[in-house]
Length: 515
Image (cartoon, rainbow, N blue to C red; front, side, top):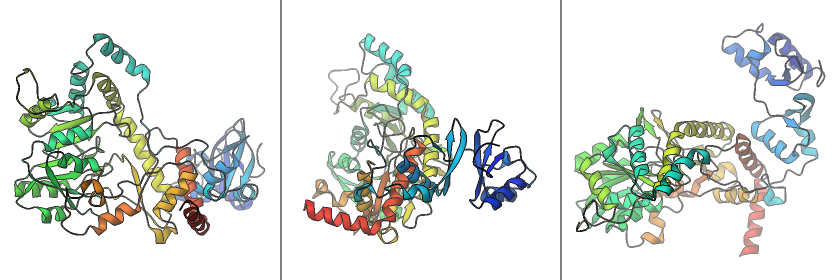
């Protein structure tokens, strides 16, 4: 059989023979090939053990246990990228293919000897030639958008038209709510402004400090005072006990956030809101598609507001959706989002121009049609990140409740400086040198932002929030992201950590040079 001597085995051979070949060769694997000699997978002794533990036998064919998506190299491979991928996946050997057939087996030692594998911040070659963004919209194909875009443009009705109405109805059907309780607006911030506009002012709104500043701005624009409370260390969402302790006679509402798509403790917050006679307004900017025990975000709060901006799992290019528990509230917000006017120029209601255009509605409708498939791919990438990073001491992940599905609008890791040897900010700068964008999100928390000086209050110190904000790093994630790119992000992290002392010294030097 052609290929590297002694380690190519036909997929129909018995596992017993493959295991003997693995033990005889000493490199820990065999290459599984078809009748034409083309590679179909790899098999290690670990694969054999797992197969046996799952009830298989050594008489089963090799094809029943082999890994069918192995890391491979082809003629003209980039040695830096290949070495990074091998380190990311813990691979000691990689087959080199020609026309799909293995010609030799490359070892990590051989590659390391001939490659400058220093992190880019230490003078090595960046793992990415072009910048890798931290987020990128996953858009429907233009051919799918074109017919409806053309109809909207040719009709001359590019606002308050049939596309927006259809989008609202389709979003309501997805969420499982009545269509008259859903309204589309130009962006999520406008939706939050409208939502908090139903509250009596002046007064206070209890909300987490660990959130995007638009949550707080929606309150201050309505003459309300954000009362900023502590986050929970595991899932980064608002602590219900801290919220309860912050309620006073001036409190007008509770506002919680689906942080990165993870639901806050909604049962506790709903009970608290009802006990104190307060509305529960949810900033669901990240959460279109989040579920709890199969029930979708959008059905828990008195008002919930979603974002449809380019970084969100469902996008209208720009836009937002407001979902109301009560039809009367939805009707009021629909009027106020249209400058306070429905049918009469003499309407005296207050309002603003929050309309979603027909063109944005076309994009939103198409994005919604692909949402579940896109979200499934996104969650697969999240699991791959966790698999690749899970063995590194010093990285921890957001804890998602067992009965919940998060959208993972962002993939955030907490970086423990002591465990990693590098701080969150050092890793961010090291990744930037590799052309990998990251985001310190949310940093700083609202109670440390100057925009809220004198306009908000934090009833007590918020050490958990400050720790989370200091440690969080969001890594690149979007639904159509290539797995190879994800693994190279992990490889970049691994080689920074492997050279942590030198990286710290270099960053100190750069600090002095720039200072």
